[in-house]
Image (cartoon, rainbow, N blue to C red):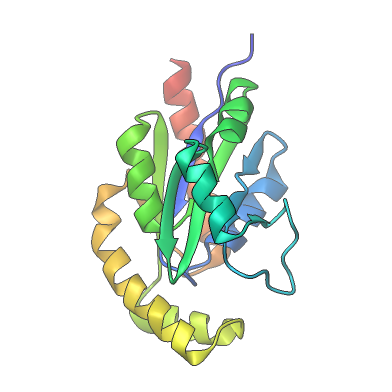
Amino acid sequence: MKNKGLLIVLSGPSGVGKGTICEKLVGARDDISVSVSVTTRKPRVIDKEGVTYFFRSRSEFEEMIKANKFLEWAEYSGNYYGTPVELIDEKLERGEDVILEIEVQGALKVLGKRKDALSVFVAPPDEEALYARLRNRGTETEEQIEKRIKAAEEELKHKNKYDYIVVNDVLEDAVVEIERIIKNEKEKDAK
């Protein structure tokens, strides 16, 4: 029988590189996937339904909340984001590792509910680097960037609540460090 998969909560402020790290981790292994969240935010040009997010209206999302369809959900920068619990549990039971790439507010909710979760906070090398990354993405208005910067300042205060903190200064180094953490945790679970 295959061992149960590992639930990995990868979190940190917007713009810190969580998405890029997840792409690298998933690209390196065939037994790991990123949970696809449900959101009410408008799709960006690069978004694909069911791949980057499941896009739903506010009323559809609120119906899902009432039906307990989320492991966690949060409102962030004026939009809802939620992690569909059923899909995650199916993958874990098949022995697949699942990464939840979520904002801090949602991550803290998951960590309160799921003691089996491995938590990794991805931190910027410094606040200036984070601000530059947000501005250089070119995907948000200045007002949205300012909201994300204020949110990031609050989120950074919670980093010590995680099992591990990984500084994303050099992307490849951060990916290698997270791969090592996952490997070590899986070896601990196997004993």
